[in-house]
Length: 362
Image (cartoon, rainbow, N blue to C red; front, side):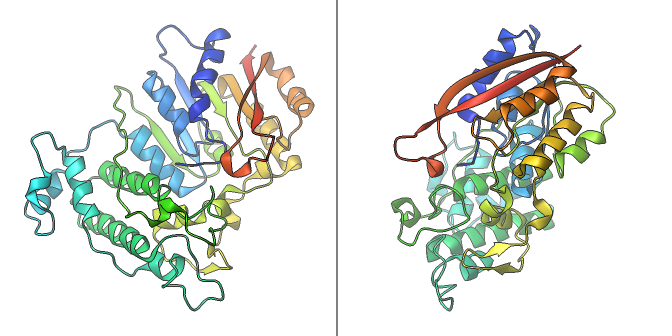
């Protein structure tokens, strides 16, 4: 999905830096904790490399992605839905072939559900919100209704216990990832476009996500990352930090994805229809509290190597970060250039630097 600060394109570079500074052992048999998981792209990369991954994020939709990509280790069989899918009157049997997986069959079933007028339709589509001074145009009427019908069906299956917890989160992650392909936004969800983007007018369809299997048990958490870290008594081989780097809080920028993930009919307000998010504020979106939180994490002594990935335009200054990290052990600093996040791009200023600190405890 499109996500501020997504490190998917930078994962290999960060991994190469860890190899360069001899952080990785030759077997990759290490425990990696991603404290600000976001879209789970870093966790996915290191899981695929064979590490045991722990991850955390304050946002529930991120937790859904983590559960599907990281904690889940099995290709879903959806055994509890086999009779429902095979006997479905709305799904042509001709869609199935011998190569069609149970996961693909379930997605085909969900994609054929008729639109319903649920919370997303009534609040984030133009017809559903037509009584507002500015009707909301996050999704077309049809697509909003499709999202409602799919989300409601996933919840019904969970309540009836015909899908496992892993299968539930795989379907939620599939929906979350697919929504971004049809949303009428420039990048984030703090505002919708006042004219229709071409992708928003296409018929909504769930897109299959990649399922990563491994022989290690992985653990995911939803909550304040520092509180979660403090609850551990163990020492992590690699503690990876990729915190917010500017004043833009993630919760309001992804409020709609959070609502789809929770589907909790929240009270909303404003032109954008924001849910209450004050309890999800990150201390890293304020320079003073960011430095204090970084110092708390760095002084926790719950890691052998701390890796901080940060933006060169971040509100914490390079010298301030150095002052916190240098007393901890051997510190290596690297930087590289990469394209700016699309919605933040300015004319003539398309690239930005990523700073990476690698602190190996003495």
